[in-house]
Length: 221
Image 1 (cartoon, helix red, strand yellow):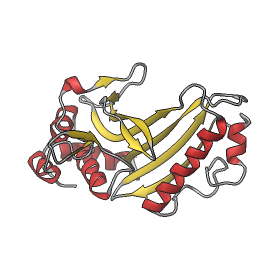
Image 2 (tube, rainbow, N blue to C red; image 1 turned 90 degrees about the vertical axis):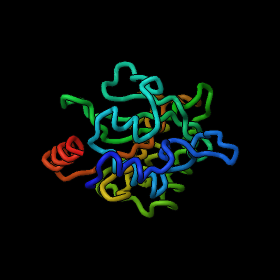
Image 3 (cartoon, rainbow, N blue to C red; image 1 turned 135 degrees about the vertical axis):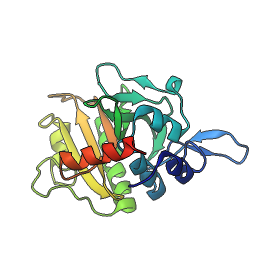
Image 4 (cartoon, one colour; image 1 turned 45 degrees about the vertical axis):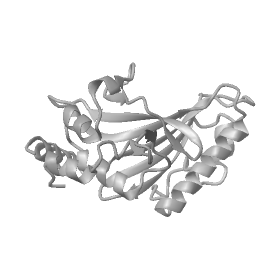
């Protein structure tokens, strides 16, 4: 991870690789699908960097970001990303415990539209998980968790309001954890779905000291 900011920009090539693709006519279009290997590498190269360095690396300005209300450290960049046929909001996630906010991941957020049938929502969650398995292989979620999406009966428990969320996770890239999380309203037992689905990529480290080292290295880049 020893990359100075100029090297990061060189790695990115055209600014905005992580967030946007460029069509033949030069028009920027939202990127699609789960993050590719190269996009994960780009994200990892920006871990621990401050907001300005991240904006520079992604070809964004401060005007492109808006802090999410009541969620410190989360910034909506305004450009959705299509994942499995649904438009997910893109949120950059920053650790705000330092003098400067530093990037630790990216969250893709899909709020289930009002009136969506429960079966439709949960079928999409299953399809999403299967697509992730096709791209990244089998999940690395701790086997003992009883709210895994792949555990028999978990989807029914979500439908019946017995549990508020279910998750699966994958180790991707060099030090990134992908988490797919399905959340429903507490005790929601209705035919229509109330909830959201998150696809989150975040730095995966063994301890705080390793994270501190990454931040110190980024600060000296």
